[in-house]
Amino acid sequence: MANPSILILAGDGIGPEVMAEVKKIITWYGDKRDLAFDVSEDLVGGAAYDVHGVPLADETMAKAQEVDAVLLGAVGGPKYDVLDFSVKPERGLLRLRKEMDLFANLRPAQCFDALADFSSLKKDVVAGLDIMIVRELTSGVYFGQPRGITTLEDGSRVGINTQHYTTEEIRRVARSAFELAKRRGNKVCSMEKANVMESGILWREEVQWVHDNEYPEVELSHMFADNGAMQLVRWPKQFDVILTDNLFGDILSDCAAMLTGSLGMLPSASLGAPMENGRPKAMYEPVHGSAPDIAGQGKANPIACILSFAMALRFSFDQGEEATRLEKAIEKVLADGVRTADLMGPEGGTPVSTAQMGDKIIEA
Ligand code: ATP
Ligand code: MG
Image (tube, rainbow, N blue to C red; front, side, top):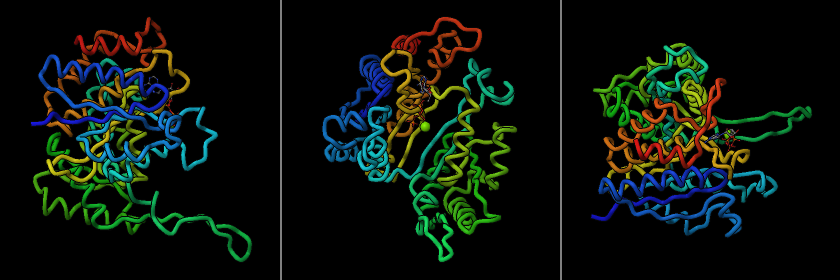
């Protein structure tokens, strides 16, 4: 059987630096665990613009459609701020998401014990936290029509956005959430505003339909999103998988992210429809951006990118045990007190470099 395939798009800024550590780990898997991947690399974002004049070449897009998983670093940087919107680095990323139809965005909020003091919340509220937010990524108010700003007859203006969800858009992302829950704590909490929004009513009904017809064994609850935000901060450990729409998911996942500490620790996955092999189309990337302020200095924390690869092991390569092994190695390194600069508390200490952090994780 052919090796599983990965397309690496390291991108801009710290993207290539953190991705270098993932590449070391991929090599380690081939050498030490007999788990070889077919890896190809290409350009995205500003790096692609510099060579091709576009943030994602058609050939790169075609490759992304064929591989088992895309690993993305980060895109963008001050050098590209002056570019026309149509060729901005971020457009490369949007094109990937859109053409691969990655409708389910998975953002775990996992608190490593060694970093529990980093949370803005009390230690006992976050220690051991492990929840997953599933955000619908391709529809909702971000894309709904009609939208725009129009001028009324009296000269005043009106800005319009439309929250728009179809049965199928809701059902497919709900399936992603239930599938995930089956591999985790078997619990889904769906969040909307069915008390004030028609799309919220449909959301609730369709999620319930998928549950009753396809996943009756998973525990399902519904919550209004405002209450959900409150509960997320009050006692986040009550949740396992949170399922929500594009707009609420944007807000709730940023909120959940800060339960756990640094931006340098947060991975994500974006999944689409199942391919022929039964696994979803997928792209994995750290939540952070290209961090131009620290790029090229060896200061970036590679853990978010490495955890994104762990998600790839779990969701694209059926290597859940290896994913857990990798996460455990990270936990051990943190427990040993190894810290990149972003993880240093006020008491200070000597941070390790991006490469040293990668080496320590491989050692562990
Ligand atoms: P984008 O618009 O691409 O989301 P941004 O400006 O919102 O970018 P980042 O590029 O993620 O955000 O950077 C925000 C801050 O977090 C910066 O100060 C950056 O140095 C820091 N940061 C981001 N990622 C990391 C990392 N992996 N390790 C250390 N610090 C990081
Ligand atoms: Mg940002």
